[in-house]
Image (cartoon, rainbow, N blue to C red):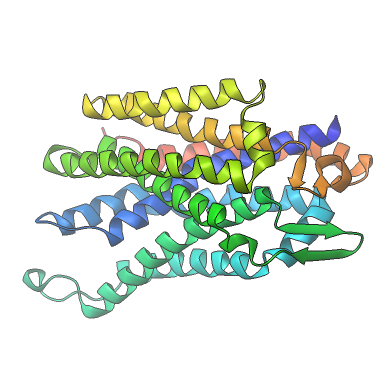
Length: 334
């Protein structure tokens, strides 16, 4: 039961990163895709929305990594070997995003009529490219873990080809990219007004259409290339969660069309949370299918017990700090 408790907390952290980090990646995607007569205003709105709080969302990724290497060390070791290349590209993407975001903000600008300087445009291109590549890679890694291309034996890790480049992994990468874009556009539609809000509403509707289309494409790939995950999605414990995710996705699209942005934001968050929770339930009991389960990879009980006892103390410091950060920088000025 201790293993399940820590695994459940890890899944909650993945969901938090999927929602908050996903919205940040999506902001970078729309920064790269900014266009039309309000191109500069769109990028300013994205920068203001992300502001000084966006980098704090990576705390959830760090939380996942710490839980993984302390609670499931053999899984952490196997993933570090098997996914060495895509994981390092993800790290490079995260670093480049942060550096480019700051360097662009402090780049010298030409006269207002001429727009940003060439230096600022170069950093903006790097920021946008890293924002597109990173969530795509994370989705590919998720597909590789679920599809059975990583084999773990006693003291060995082997690959069946390049599992992160398998069709199902590429489809999951594209799905993650579209989901991040959708989430960010919904958030930005809520935080803006006037014609700018209509720009982001239109982008959210297009991204939502892409999410639906990629879902249709992904289903047969799961059935043929990730049979364990497909069967897990159809289990009684998983179906209600997936059904809620589908329902909130439909509700989110309808609410966007009705211009009810606050509720659309809430349902889009629930949509992502349910989809990731459904993936976790379908993947159970495997951390790396088909060779490594939660129980096989778990650390000794004293370590798991220590983690579960100390986590409330750490979260007691982390959560109020994050709440204060968002309250200060995202709260309405009266």
